[in-house]
Length: 303
Image (cartoon, rainbow, N blue to C red; front, side, top):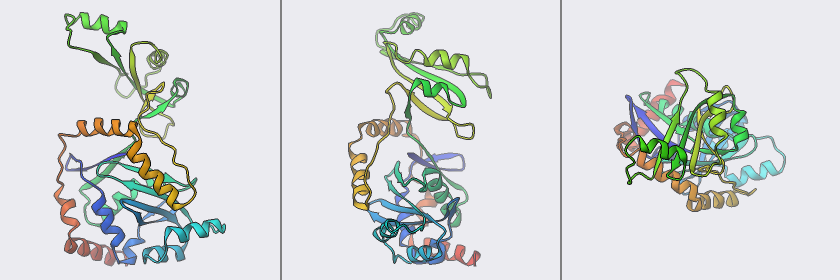
């Protein structure tokens, strides 16, 4: 997932890691256990370099143990192996502008993580700062795309071998230094594109089409997302492993070796070059005095 911050209508590409590191080192137990998601209280503690266990639970004993740094992920796994219903866990690996999350079947997912970060920012008094994240484009089949609940737009990249390229480039005088072009199809504002969507997706496998991206909602309640059709998906990986070390190794390996991720990151970083890099509110809050003051203020308010 790529991520960024926004403040006063400006986008900032800043690292989330310093904020999370301050959080997991916080000794204030009340503060550590004051954040919630639909599955219960959410808790976080470090298990590797920039890798955190993210746990959702309603069990008071577990909340107290994790908040006081008395319980490791190994302890949690042993409880799960013993069949104890203690909650649900995920691992999150956070880099300077993206994060990866691996969840158990019912574990917290990226939406819960994003909600947690925004709750944390508000608790620290940073109501003017918001955290946003978005998946790198996913891969779907043409048939799956046609079944989506809401279809918004199509973006087609064609090269010089496609007839559309020849037709359109001739209108520009056939310049020789253009190697590809992007054609975007959109419906009227607020409307869904049905007929045009189906007609465009049906051409996904044609020679000369480098990529075909659709913007759509898989389910009516979802946010709009971009999906690549027919093998052009950007980032997806399967990390297998039942134990902590296996999952951690999988997260680190996937981040290093996933060429789709590398390509998508390069594209994202190029797109966001003009964004601001230094968000003073974030750089200030991680100083010891500001952090401790904000934590104490919030903890007193929820007493």
